[in-house]
Image (cartoon, rainbow over all chains, first blue to last red; front, side):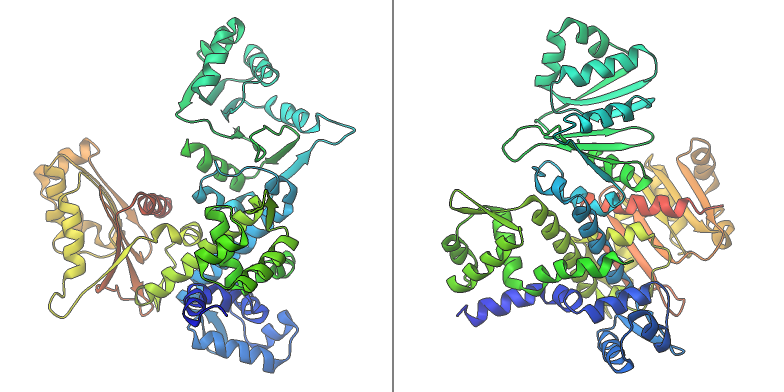
Length: 263
Length: 262
């Protein structure tokens, strides 16, 4: 047996989240009331459960000061509101990750700071594109299509890839791309400098701003006015160009700026 | 809203068992084997071993070279659950601060990132020091070069405090209800006020409606105060915090309120 002391200590540590998250009734009631104050009839319609069950759940939430009854309507207390908003965030985080399960589960996430990772719900409308055996460069081609329309690009570029750089140079030369901000480490900068073409067209280009990071950053993030995209590294340290996460909504851009500002 | 009930099973699987959460937290810190986890957590071998099996079956962990590693996705899950736990702790630890208080002025984003305040402290007035909250704020302000604040009511000491910051060549940015504008603005010594306004060292924004929030952002600290549900300001409690995260949180909230000024 695990000692009672250990067990109690662990139970105490997590009792709060267990209380809310493991009861379908309690969490659903909170969500329903969060959508707007409701009376018993409304709740019965939303939850499709008998009154007795619902009343029991309501009583518990009321005793825990998460909801209150005002003129026959149930509404959230301030504590209930704070907790429910954060529960919604948790559920959305979960949803965003699950939606692109293969993407999140295959890669090294250690360079995404905790504060950014815990707001992954902002990516809930992101699409995950992967290359297939019949189309090996599906992810890369989607990426090219996106950047070809951009006027401004901010990129955390963790790899020295002439394939990528060549396209950026082309966009700059064609004057489609007006501003490019590259966040790279010293090693990549040196590689760029040792290539005479790239040195001239990127490093010494006045449309290009280069930010140097102290360490290597193992994530490839691109942000324009219109989209954000993310590719990652495998746990073994290799870059994975076959899977890309793309989003065009404001929330995702907020998330991406949070990430780039960290570096 | 359908996805909510779907995912709940997965969330439940982790949330239901404190032991599984504890194991995941350990593996997040470092990959380990069953015996190692037993040693670290003091949970019995049989219990660790059976829960390891369940976690592995659900792809939350993987065995690589005799050690269990947390999967990247489970890492996000765990952080997300911990963040939720922190938000609940923050609510219960400062129950007196939140309970029965008006949160309307907080943006939904600031509520979602409420755990940025996790290192805060609650300052409460005591019978022997009934002005403790105000004095705390005052202390923060007089030593600060830059002050941004949302003042929902007029305290007679505010004009003097603002003067002091400006005299030290600091900057002051205020959001105040329209109703106290005259009263506050013109109480600031004109010889200090006029040049400060001209050089943009003093900026005062008027808020048209009721302002149900007290917020101060100084060089080192932030302060947050709320109104009670009965409409009165709770003068007896403020949350203060001095870390970078809470500073950013407060800045965002300040900008949010600023978007609503006249």
